Length: 111
Image (cartoon, rainbow, N blue to C red):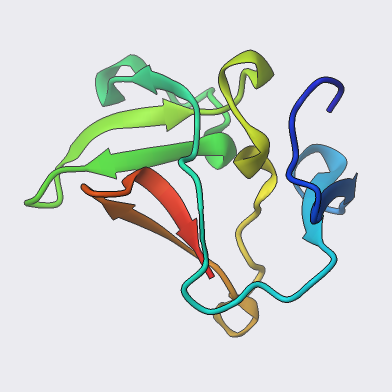
């Protein structure tokens, strides 16, 4: 995406998922390595409707598991490079996890 900062060791390449773009790395991500925070527009759950594309949205939850708000990265002007990290096709292929830690900020990625 033109003008969007992507760290040097990552690159945006053609992908078969999510609008044809995905994030790739030139080296293995170390266990426990952190990236983030995920950037997006803050939306309230009640402001969303079934016609919206939820693939680029993350729920931010409270201590009891309740959804506090949604981070919506569909608008490139209000998002960052982490919007191109896609969900693995299967549990076996999963190699990253989204975490929410009050000390790290909402929706960080950990290898």
